[in-house]
Length: 88
Image (cartoon, rainbow, N blue to C red):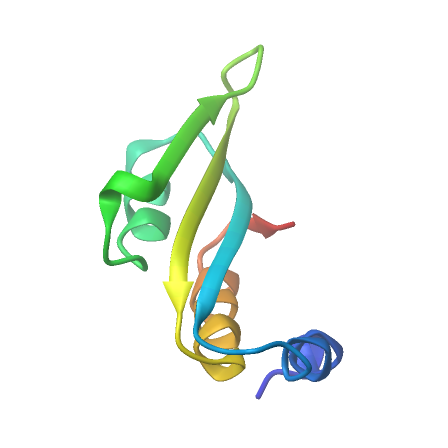
């Protein structure tokens, strides 16, 4: 596990699973980057895209039922590999 996510993992372990989890990312507003982020998730119906005022960035919000803390961390690790994406 990536060191950046250890504290989050410890916090998530205190929760009951499975549960609905809310992810939020900021990404450059190019279609390739947005597609890479949204393809991490199974259900596209739970994805909301909102461009910034100038259109340079897009906020990507996702609500998805996650089965465990490990599954949540896995999503964050995948997103961290995409250039320019910031996890909130």
